Length: 490
Image 1: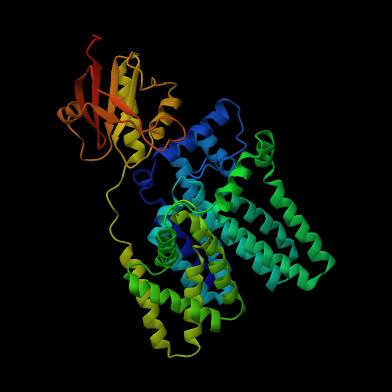
Image 2: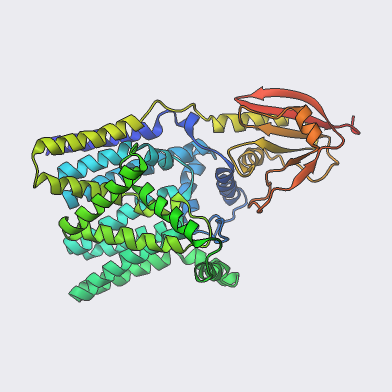
């Protein structure tokens, strides 16, 4: 018993180290993170509680619960994005613990610990679990939901309906793309109620459903005051016919499905990955028993609706399913261990371990997003010296400039609208090594402006450079800043 506790502690220490190591240099802080931090800033300084979450590319708001979860670390840290990233990383460590707990119940301690270890060191999982982004919390809440379903069915602890209501409500508020997962888990749970039909399970089932609905009250209150706009958009989104060639969408969906398994089996070439994925699914479904079949059904039935999406599909739509390939791998090892020599199983385990560890390559060059963005903002303020100015990004990994606007907001500075020409200074920021020269920019006469609105439009507007001349250029923390002045303004 003591050895098992020690092993779990070591597992969590490894998970924490991999997620917190050099966090300041590796925290991604781009436009989406700037929007989120700006809303938190407004929440505290304007005493305005958001009733909906961020607006997604499909025109539908997520739930507001992510803001509420991050409010305390934001307030305690004085608005530090690094504190939010650290909080996300620690939620990732909790997700590892939940995964170990569920895996050990489904597979026994040995295989449960092994797949939890693979999950803890998976580079793809690590990268997402320290990202300031609401979908990053989906695996934690889907794990808690699976734990609740297991306790309800296997151990007849019906008060876990409370956890199920809490976890599925938060999971759905992180991203509405997890709707199919939430529906599947609740159908399975209510099927359990129908099978057993005791007074206790019905009461706890209704209590869990009440918790689920209660956590949506702010969102529903907003919808009631805005003609149920997001509900209508959600229904239109799924009831409208797909846009574009369906074959392309189907091939993208199939690719995304097998990419789910790459987190558990990194480094495998595509043909081997697809074959191995199908082997894990088939072996688990036909030989793995009740819970293996439930996991396969969950994986397939929750993934099918993604193929009907009208717009391009993204990886975070599958975050609620991220643990299933690891669990199926555990069932696969467990099944083989009952039928084949231990040496063969050991070789397979070592092969997967090799794939995982080899994918933990030397860390990429730190992005230094936080320090670069803040220092560039301070440099612009210093050069402006109280004068009006505007700015935009020339090269960036971001689709908007809101990460800069967050730091301007915390310094009570509001850059001018870039379309105007009645300000004396214009700053052009490059975040990448390759930055166009002023001669190149002057010859092309216009530049694309990264949207400064909170939510970007489809196309970036253009800014004419007529009348602007180069004043100076400086390098700042891996970035490059060009300062332009209006020739007519001296």
